Length: 128
View 1 (tube, helix red, strand yellow):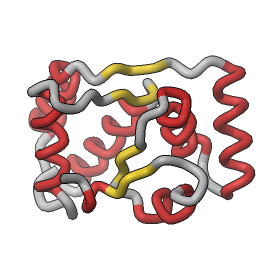
View 2 (cartoon, helix red, strand yellow):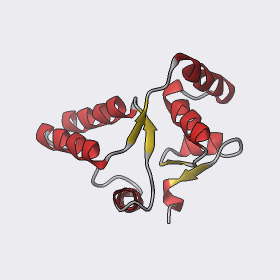
View 3 (tube, one colour):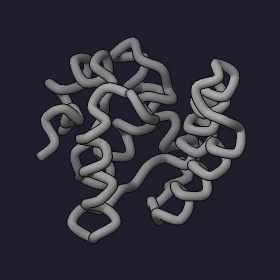
View 4 (cartoon, rainbow, N blue to C red):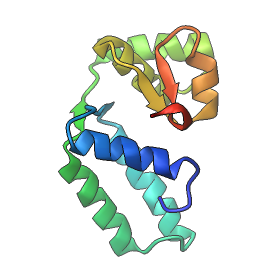
């Protein structure tokens, strides 16, 4: 969203994905998480509902590969959550990146600090 920290880095990552330099994957729960963040922005009058819907359409058109975690995979994400005292929502991303053997790119400082010693993770501020 406009005005967010590390906006330029996030746009660079998006451009790299669209141009084929980087490939983005995420657990399917990202759709609802992003929609909820947009909903909050609408409620706070930061963006309009039409802009929120357009953002969702643009994200859909980007072709981010979505992965539905099954019960066994979610149990593994739960184990990570219990070990690190993080939400299962957050550790779903950690689990998926580890499973795909790719780094997780995040702007979440707590997630980064908590997981960086055990998992391959990159804070968005350090993205090219």
